[in-house]
Length: 329
Ligand code: AQP
Image 1 (cartoon, rainbow, N blue to C red):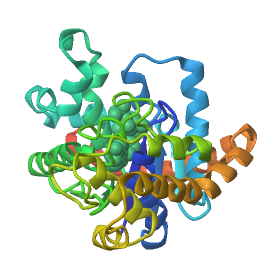
Image 2: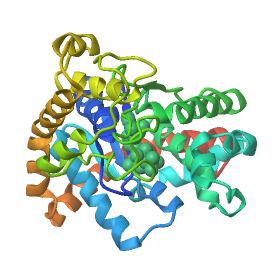
Image 3: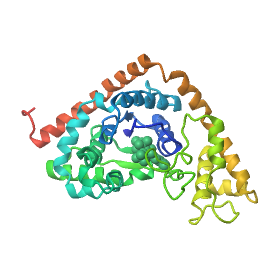
């Protein structure tokens, strides 16, 4: 089974990225053949950005994935922009994707906002490039958070449309969305997801954040009315903390409810903050050790790109052949 997922380099990675995606990347290493992970710098160009910062953040994101447990020897870890097959397949897949499908994507509507006419065409095309990322490797499984469900549906539709029109060529992938922690919420505004560009600064916890600051943010988390520590629709703040602690302790939300029955919200928030801070410490320490070793990061990214190209190039050749692009093979 082939696993593929991509992660944006546009910003410091937060607890939502870690719980919703990165943890599953690490687990995927042991079950996939191969597990393929990509820092999607091309996706990062669809919004306003600084070129030097994009390059720097791309290396930092690669270092963070390694610090979290990815082993570039055991998986394929690379930078999207190093493998041109992604861009070419994006273009080819655009012939089986409609403007209407892309216009309906919530992420596009949210990010483009009211000024949709002025949004970059790249932002509209974001899901087609994401489909190309996955389909270029004939991946079966895509570990992502809940916010990517719609993009997974679109890539399945695109693969099915391609196979129907040009013959069975592409694998129709499945999303792998965690049952607990698929949508980590902003600590201050728990009706929103924790997000790089949305949400609040005080409600966003970074993977490489100082432990004292993490605990402070959890202590300041918005609690709900009432006193019970239970998962409930009208308790998005407490439910969020219960889910986070369930992931940290590798247990179920029900077990967390039992463990904190009768406790006050203040004590509970402090306990979650301290456990999250301790849980992230090995990753933070390892990240700080390796993040400035540009030579080593560039080395393993280049090795990863070679491995990625070796898988994607034959798939692109099949796609071109099926579509009548280029000479007959
Ligand atoms: N709050 C979240 N809970 C669970 N999973 C999440 N993911 C993102 N937010 C949450 C998952 O993280 C992976 C990488 O996402 P990305 O490549 O989109 O990186 P990002 O831009 O840093 O993520 P954000 O915060 O989602 O950015 P915004 O909100 O600015 O667009 C994906 O698998 C995603 O599902």
